[in-house]
Length: 217
Image 1 (cartoon, helix red, strand yellow):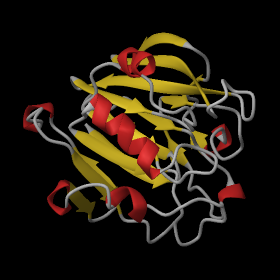
Image 2 (spheres, rainbow, N blue to C red; image 1 turned 180 degrees about the vertical axis):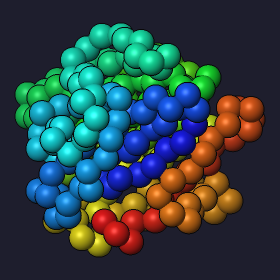
Image 3 (cartoon, helix red, strand yellow; image 1 turned 90 degrees about the horizontal axis):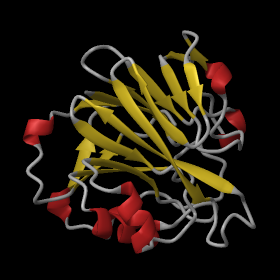
């Protein structure tokens, strides 16, 4: 399967069969524009404008923005309830965590999770090969809170998102605070916006942090 970072918390996930998902499309509120992209499925973690700009996704995709389980084009999608803050949504509302099953790989997109790690939530998420998690703080969990999720879930791959980039106008931290919590040999810098993953190459014994180039965002 392929993962393309489209900026902020937005990724395009493409299975080998061609079925594709776009996560949390955003509008220019973040400080830069999202380029139009096609997909079969769009998942929306919550209705804030930097996560629900469905107009930027072409191809008449099926939009998923509620809790439940679906199978579309051979891809499994499950949405779990969580919160955008640590007060059960009292400040910023609810947040959907999405679990995807593509090419035998289990992927988790945490949306705008603001809820601190707890065993019940971690067990609901379950086994994860690839974890996409916000690290910028302020509106979401911060770097250290994100690391707690990583330590509990023990994914093969972590992809940080929702952090300050050069053109971002959001009051959030950059990615360095998160990267600094890992050993140097655990961090992989992706040359470009797209990377391929093969389940057979996951050893289940170590976690790598993949950091995409953010020069255009």
